[in-house]
Length: 137
Image 1 (tube, one colour):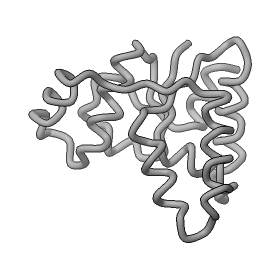
Image 2 (cartoon, one colour; image 1 turned 45 degrees about the horizontal axis):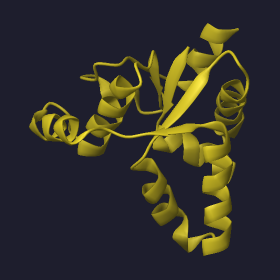
Image 3 (cartoon, one colour; image 1 turned 30 degrees about the vertical axis):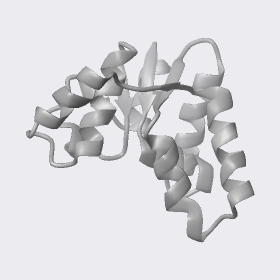
Image 4 (tube, one colour; image 1 turned 180 degrees about the vertical axis):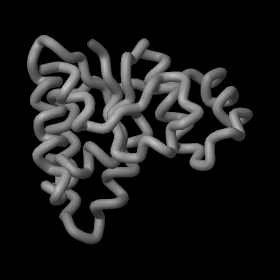
């Protein structure tokens, strides 16, 4: 199974954000095994680095990104796919549309996110961490 981890789930894991941490940790742990190949979108990494700037030092944030990249593969979208995403105005949030394009790039089965509603027009099915964990059990 192939999944793309949305930025919010990665942040839940890295910051141990409650009440979401346990599910995020279990998703990341599933990616560390052989059953699931986990990806994170290239653009999620600078977003995470920026979001955490007020709470964590530069060194700590780099270590967090290393931790993610140790388990998750990084994927991007081609120039053409980004241009296609720009035209997909059904998405309220352009970043979510890019997540969908990155998920398609790796033929992901699911996008793992807490914001299912933001992905109602996604071509790759978005599910919550809890739903994903139910599926793989």
